[in-house]
Length: 483
Image (cartoon, helix red, strand yellow):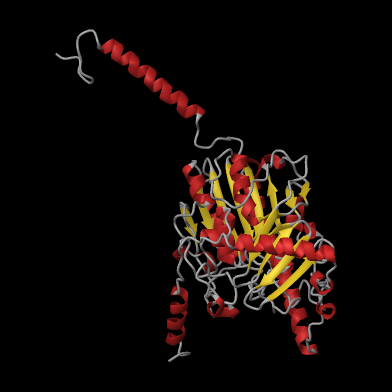
């Protein structure tokens, strides 16, 4: 017989078996030393997102009025980013930026209703490839699977109980308790996996502001706690009638009630995760996709048109396993695009080369972060200004943050503003109105940097998916509201 591989000759079997044994031993050792999850102490990764949550409505961020006891307590165990910026004030685009580390004009999803390009490398995909079981729970239709947002999830729950048009809902959604109940029910049924990536989205602070009892009256002027008006309407000269001012006050109180309600449900979820031993073996990120304008700059309880602090200064805290490094505050500027690379870096996983964000070394926080320049861009108005072939949002409001200064441009209106948001967080004093030579030089530099950033627009292809709109029309017709 020839001595070809795979053929047996007398006297060769013992040698062949010995070689095979060494090969299997090598595979076993390699498998043990190169586990798909490189840091066994970090068994789990948890992302909790609170929709439409202004930074100034949380106790741990300095609010003297709004009750957020569970998040305030968690902040004492966490790294809190006090100057945290959303790169786009709209739900879908912001969450895609959070999970890709890229600006919308690179990941390609400009606003709600558009598709998420599958060429994006999203965090759930990367963690699934590393060995994590990935599960997600959406609070609203904005993050529906039909937009391909759920890339990389092994299980994705979007069982919305409030349909569009009901209770003033502008999209299918579900209350915070329903989200919490769904998460707990799933984990109780399946058990806690060895390595879990859990994404939970709470939609409640979004319109319509309708917190359940007792949160609907907790800030009522006739109730036990009277919330001071938050908007600086009179100072900003917003011309509102007395009836309109009362409506603004009512919305403000109900919005605060929704924040406190969301906090209570997050508390329930955290207590459950703690009781199961998950929390202390997890890196936990709690953040918000954007804030909410309350008439401060003429935007009536909405978001997307402007990039003022009311809608892009949001919250972010990161609790490390065993509450390592908590409590600590990071006062330097960070943005939503920095979170995904920071988490991957902490886990020891490679960061994709095309991310726009920059990792924060969560293990080494003794020194201040290096200075960062960050950008944000609005998502509204829609079709009437989406005419630039380079990028859907090119003509919409945009800003650059460099240190304490923030330059805002709105190309479709031809306007420009400059604020020192550290000294003037409400953006009441436009420095360009009485610019001295130093401000002129500064504004010109920021102007050039902002234009240079905008010129990098190279979005992955996307398209608008109008299916809920079509479903809503059919539903209204069936109810006799349309013919």
